[in-house]
Length: 89
Image (tube, rainbow, N blue to C red; front, side, top):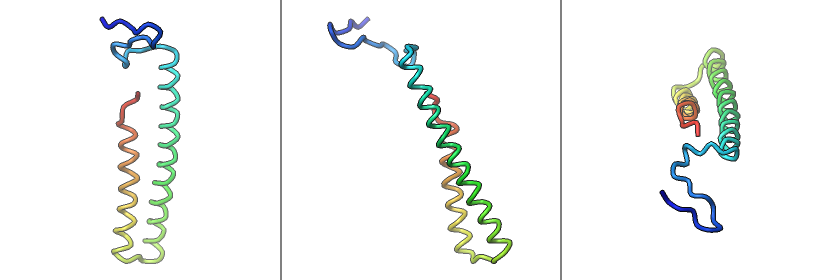
């Protein structure tokens, strides 16, 4: 077992098992930030899909415009998916 350096920080053998209050607080704060980003991305996805739907129904967009907008929607959806399946560290 590694010995801590005198006067230095304590040695942590497995940081994922560190249940100190500081580590718990940091995990909580990261998860709060992740949740806020998810909410923001979900709102953006809703706006983009609603706008695309309204534009298709009302103004007949060109195929290029539809393709460009669907690419934007796919990128946002992919970022949401990555946030959802990412580690909960």
